[in-house]
Image (cartoon, rainbow, N blue to C red; front, side, top):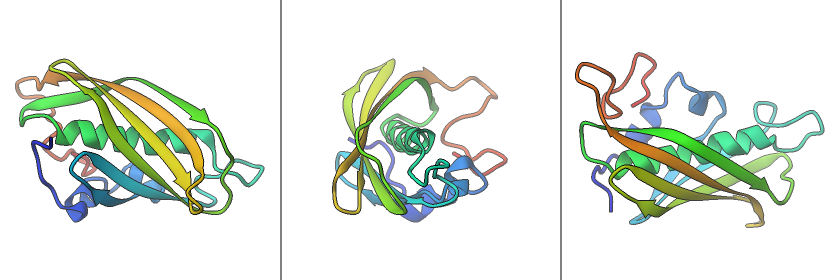
Amino acid sequence: MWKKQPTLEAMQLACTSTLVASLGIEFTALGEDFVEARMPVDERTMQPMGLLHGGASAALAETLGGAGAYLSVEEGTICVGLEINANHVRPAGRGWVVGRATALHIGKTTQVWQITIRDAAENLVCVSRLTVAVRPAAAGGPDCNEPTEGGQA
């Protein structure tokens, strides 16, 4: 399924100085058909009531779906988000949540990814869907395969 085979360390390094790093998101697994990462529920990702912020869940979901999209396209192709939704089904308190992205559709011009986020007890916290557009990289423009100034590929 994957067109690229980076290490987890390389994926993490590509996220240096980005929102991914600011939120403490860590890639934990790259399977045959999934990408997984964990995110702390702490002062960076909680809302004022001490629970995981829904926007942080959406950021984890988009990170995972975007990583999966990037890994499943040929060099010289970019993937850009079109739409994301997130259903928050259970609160999560301080600790860690784990997200897993799997492809629902991989086409020539669009991809759809499903992301589930679970707490340490494996309870479903959030289910999200990300739709991305797949486009050729513009000549001389950014390519999702080349790190940008902040390190993000």
